Length: 282
Ligand code: RET
Image (cartoon, rainbow, N blue to C red; front, side, top):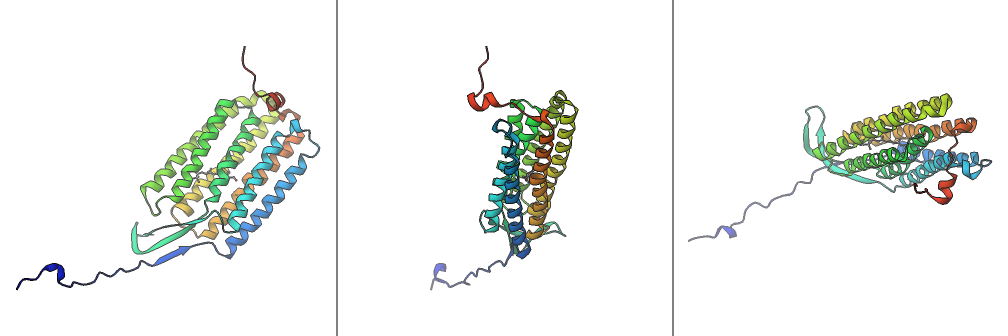
């Protein structure tokens, strides 16, 4: 009387579904996205109008500034209509005991459209600062590429494994190093070259650069608290980024364009480059 164990009925394994908590935007966040979209469109229109009586050869700053808010308008339109967003799910985290909380998982809404926006607009903002200060092409290019790497690191951190993983905080750390490289390049080379442009341009550059430095530094801090550690809700995250985006794009843009208009020495002669490209040496 031998029985084969494979025929002995055993307990049927039951799969207990892990409850999921969705962290998604609410009515406030949704409205904020639409209002920001409207303000970005309005700013783009005003920036375009400001170049009305300016000859094309002197419109460089107008063109770049307008492009920045146009890109932001597109990104906010996408986010407000529910595009450019996904959910990043992971086991919950117990903030008191500092251990994973396996009782449920958390799926948080991530707006990856922001990173597309930043990847295009932050290089343009840097380009404006570098052009204003007269930073050479080599250092401008390095700052811009490091800046794109910084934004991509943020995107990988946001879309990679959720929870408190080495992957997420690893990407974040690499992004922060890239950011330090950007600051170092623009501040060091900008402050060196701008002095040749006189006191007026120096003061304008210093004002804009310090304003940008303070604002930009807030982004990785907010990212760490909201997107990274998930300690704020999605609506609060949207509100804070909106305030920062409005200061970093339209307010920065108005400051630059209105000062530029009053200061002929900020004009940059790109006429030859525009029409003929760069000449060879010798
Ligand atoms: C991330 C995460 C990775 C580390 C660092 C970041 C910095 C982001 C910055 C964004 C600036 C955005 C601006 C938008 C303009 O409207 C990507 C958050 C350092 C500096 C100025």
